[in-house]
Image 1 (cartoon, helix red, strand yellow):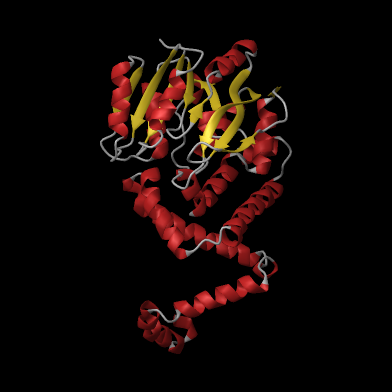
Image 2: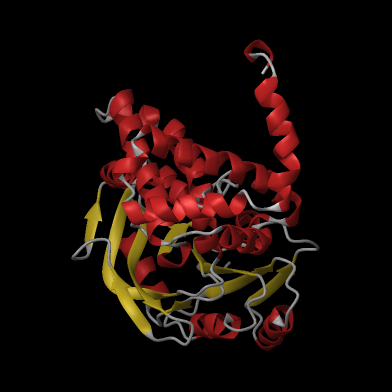
Length: 358
């Protein structure tokens, strides 16, 4: 059995997947297998992976007959992996040569450790460094429950993406919770850290590529994060209560984070209707084609929820006059559309009905 299983989930990754595989092959620790799970790619991804598979017996490739969604495809990697330790590597990301060796060594040094993370280097599409992201200023071992509470209070995945994490395969248990759209990895880290400690390595041993096709970016801009935050609120309410955070305090914390995210999307990102349509089309590959109808219904409910909560928390105080004018202009344009004009007779009829029947 290999010491480490490196799982690479792929979907239309022809631009980057070869670099990802090469970064594993260059590891100073060579006792590994590479498990590639392809989610019904339509480009040259499978051909590229097959080329590497033929040249190295440690590489296996499994192809889905249909796109089952990102997190179910991650769990496929867990199903086929045989190593004692498991490392996910997104197909557009990279590992530094000493990544496996240094992270595995931490488990040997600290038996209480359940999860090892590291600083990550963010790069653009052509590999230029954008920034180095570090959860803590120095390498350190931290109690899992302390880290869990801190992450929940911030509602931020400071541990990082799966590429920046190493765990024992047995601690993944059933894997990623596929009822989450955006925070499935975050929820898994929280779940594991309730059972043991977290070690952070200051050295940037993982490289994450930031680009416009990133699935998690699309999730965020379609308001799906609201569903995930509300689910985390319910799941971890007992844990927070044990650590002295009352139900009312926990609710206020969750509301604050939701509104902060909504503010950012509407006011900073200036999300438009065309943007949402584009993200929905691209999201099909992230959630799987079977769940598109569910996605649309969830989005409608969550966008309504976001606007409703902003109204209840005094939207006028959050938007300046220029933004209000822009909103009024958009409403004016909407009233000139054919669909609005077609619905006019229905609105007129409704206004004439007795209030008891409306």
